[in-house]
Amino acid sequence: MNPDLEKFIESGKILAEMREYVRSMQIRGKRIVDVCEEVEGRIRKLGAGPAFPCNVGVNDVAAHYTSPWDDASVVPDGSIVKVDFGVELDGFATDTAIAKSLNPQYDSMIVAAETALQEAIAAIAPGRKLSEIGPVVEGCIERYGFRPIRNLTGHKIERYNLHAGKSVPNVSGIESGRFEVGEVFAVEPFVTLKNAEGAVRDGDAAYIYRFVKTKGPKSKEAAKLIDYIKDTYKGLPFASRWVHNSWKEDDVEQAFDELVSRRCVAGYPVLVEASGQPIAQAEHTIVVTENGCRVLTG
Image (cartoon, rainbow, N blue to C red):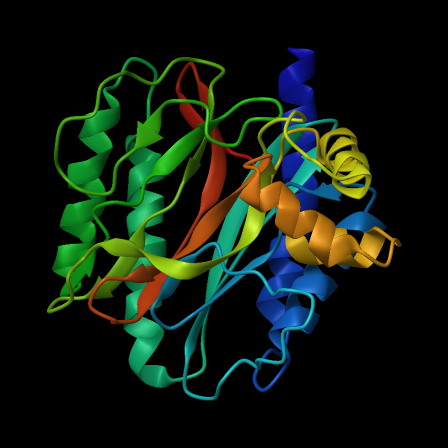
C-alpha cells in the first residue's frame, strides 16, 4: 500500500473515533471555547494533532469560527451547531463535520445534509467529472425542501495542504477536473432554508490564521513569533487562541497584531449565510479507489 495512503487511513481512523465522541458531547449552554478545547485536547490524547482549529458554527455561521482566547460566548439553546474538526499525522490530514440540533425544527435540515453527503459519496468514481457531483448534492437537498450553499465546496487534501486545488461542488455548474485513483477529498454539503440567499459572505472577524512569510516583522518579538508559528504549524491553519495559550511572552498580543498588519500571517474570515439563515453541514473525507471511493472518517 502507498505509505501516504496508510497515513491518511490512520488519520481517518482517529477522526472516526472522534466523530462518535463529538456526536455524544453535551454542548447546550457550554462555553464555545470549552467545546473547541475539549475536541482539540481529545485529538492530542489520541496521539495526533488537530489538522486545524475546531470550528463551532452556530446558526448562520457556516465556517471558520473558533474561539479566540478570551471568548465568553456559549452555545445558545434552540440553535443548530456545526462542529467541524480534523486530525493530522505528520501532515496527513482528514476532515469531518457533524451538525447538532438543539431545536427539533432543524432536524430535517441535518437529515438533508447527511443524505446529500451519502449520495455524493456513492456517486464518486475514478474518471468522473468533479462537476457531476454538484447536481447530485443539489438535487438531494432540494428534494427535502431546502437549498444548498452554492459558494462552499468540498476540497482535495494533500500532505500539509487542506485545499489542494480541486473542488467538489454542491450545486450544478462548471468545475474542471476529474477524480483520480488515490486522491483524497473532503466532501461537505451545506444546507440552508429554501428562502435563504444560499451563499456565504465574509464576516468582520477572523480567529483562524495561516502562515504566509517570515520577512516583514520590525520588532524582535514579532520576528521570534513568526519563526515559532512557521516551525510549529508547518503551513496548517492555526488559532490565535493557540498562539496566545502557548507563547509565554508577555507581549504576545502586540507581536501577533504586528504579524497580521505586516501580512506575515493571513486570517480566514468567519463565513456567515448572506441572508442570516441557519445552516446545516455534513462532511467526510474519502479516498478515490478503482471501484469508487472509500470513506476514511466513518
